[in-house]
Every structure is written in C-alpha cells, then in structure tokens.
Length: 238
Image 1 (tube, rainbow, N blue to C red):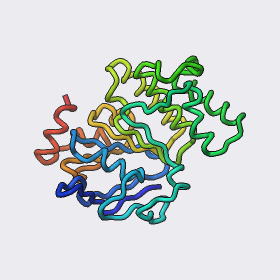
Image 2: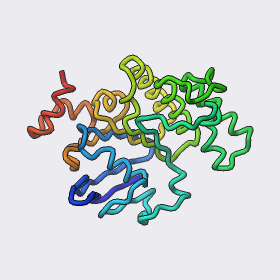
Image 3: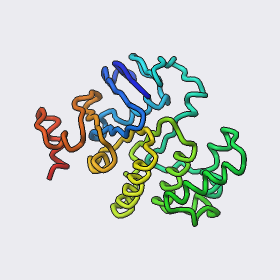
C-alpha cells in the first residue's frame, strides 16, 4: 500500500530523518514509536504527503510519488492529529465534511455519519456544537470523521496524548474494536508503548531520526537490543 525508501529530511543544518525505510501492507496497523524528538511525527507527515522528503522515494500502491502529490491521491488518506481540529459547526457537519467534498449524495452522507458517530459512542452529540465538546468527545468525533471517508490509509499522530488516563484507555479500547472490524490500513505515532502494544501488530522504533528496530511490540519488549534502544524500552517493560 505504501513504501518509503531511504527517506531523509533536513531542516536547515539539522537532520530530522536519515535514510529511513518503511513498508505498509493493506490491512496492517503499524506503529511508529520513539521518544519526543525522535522523528516519528516528521516521518508521518512525509508518509501522509504533508511534507516532501529532502531525499528518498515514496511509493503509493506501487507507484512512485512526485514531489507534489496529486490531490486525487491525497484525498485517499485521512489524518487525525493530537489536537482535534474541528470546525465551529455541529458535530454532524464536522463528520460530514469530507464526504461532502467527495460529492456523495445526501442520503449516503447521513448514513455514513450516523454509523461512525455510533461506532465511537458520540451519536447523541450529533446536533451539538463541536466547540462545546470535552477533549475525549472531540477526539472521538475526529476519528469518526476520518473513518467516515473510508480512507485507503489512516494516519494517527499521537491521538491520545492530550487525554487523561481513563479517557485514553476507553478510547483506545474502542479504536481497537474498530480496527478489528474494519481492518483499516493505519499508521499510528505514539511515544507511549502501551498504545502500540494494544493497537498494532508491528512497530518501528525511531531514535534520533533513524529507524533502529522493527518487529511485533511483544517481540521488541522481550528481546535485547543495543543500550540506547533498551534504555527507551525499559520505561515500558516493567
């Protein structure tokens, strides 16, 4: 579905990413894990066609992507960020936005919006102003909006980090159920290995802009690595 070969990204004199390779197959949910400043969110932006890499090549469904990715391809992906970027309209209209842009008929839009609000437990908020929602409610609406367009690839950039522990745990559980039922191809970024452990089958560890280890979350925790990787993972192995 998506492949990155030898991706590097420089900002001024600073190296953000250095020769990172990444592959994503259809139906996979893959985690990008690393401490703050490791380059994982930067890699997500490049994989999601939000930023062009300094060097390297991206492939979407086997086709090499130009520096300026066509809008038709960009519309086949969805992104949910750490902070819920909702418009100052009703919840229903926020979730319907992407479907309207794609020109779906009104009946189909209503069906899709109602279905996904229900999946994330916020159907009762449909007529409420999005700006009046709690953090957890707003993020559920953001996820409903992303899933409603049935993206080829979904990108989640630290989707739980702004939430308190109980809210985060409940949403993570609901998201896991949705992944299981939809098998949506997904890349999720987190600095918390618990997110990766609960939601993904494969994870890539980034440290200092480099991809240093890859494997199943359980395998990564179990195996011995170099000192830097072991130090990072020690926070989650207790």
